[in-house]
Image (cartoon, rainbow over all chains, first blue to last red; front, side, top):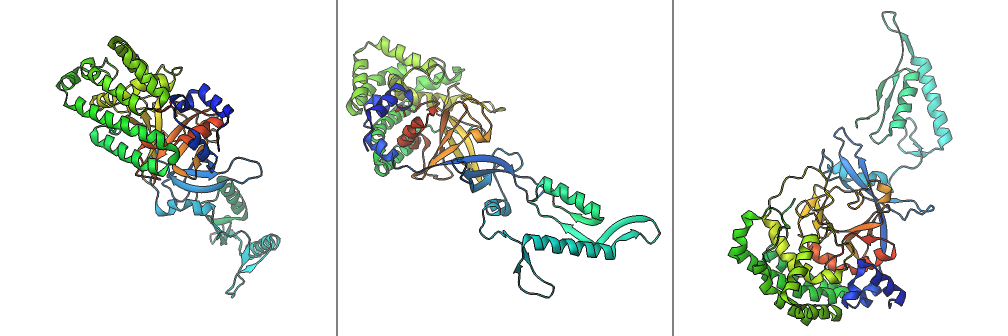
Length: 193
Length: 276
């Protein structure tokens, strides 16, 4: 494609592309320009959630910021400016992209019945209702109001909670509040960073 | 700060890279073929500088990189340089070299000294064509001086070259851990210094949403690191994507990205030797 006169005028008035003034032939470069597939990426600093080391990461997302386009994470690398890891990541941290973009991620609730070997689909409503019923039943049956010495303890020792490392602060806050309200004492939320 | 790309072997590497890119990127062939002639001259000048006892003995007294340059060493090469440009450059540039060759040596000195003093600092309004002759001629000398200048450890992120105060020409991403550490490459003395990622070297913008990075599928190791606050951009050569790249040369070959950035309304902080 040939550059238009307008293209050349724009170039010659700005020092950014003075090559035209030098006398170079810019037609091939303009032709190449029209074939370029250019993606806009954003780089965002973040922290690896997996362990207490707290390595710095840079997350690359691609998307032109249009409202109807969901940005896609395309790459995660160690942050070279981070004093903890200076660009390095462990194998688990190196796979962070797959934690975000992974077609094997579970997107719906599944249930495996007692004695069963297969996972079955279950709706969100049914799953939440069943869990609530089980928790209530277990709590009613096993709640400990007083210990052996007769002291009031109000605890629930037959239910435990374990959280994942990628749970958010807000989620963990709600977990602690709700589990403490139930009297759960075996509580681990993996909030290390 | 890393070691500079100085010395004859670096010029050989630049010429080899220009040869390779010239064959691969036909849109840049004219630029790169011309650049090979310049690099060959610069290599010769560099070898002469390294062997010059005058320059060597003057090193100890050089307090700053921009101290006045040694005319007796450089001027004898200038006429030959102008002839080379006349012979190989495109018409407008060739004519410029011809006109310069007709001037008395006092004018040459004034031209070179003005560039030596102001380049990369106070030359925003000076076009690349007006600077080309002095820039191409003095580049090896600036690199030579830089290699001989003592460096203090960097304790802060510098937007201008810590050695000569010039604006950066390029960013360079070098492997660091599993990522890429960013360095800026000086437009005057070609030295590199460390610079933070996700920070605009022009206005200091740090907001991640305002610092988009554009990469073309056809040139995956060249990044246009733009700033939506000041509308300037830094071109960065990503050596983690292509370890064979020679930043100064790969920059020259990325002309379509200059045109693209210009279309998008981004200006380059400091144009390269060919004005792109």
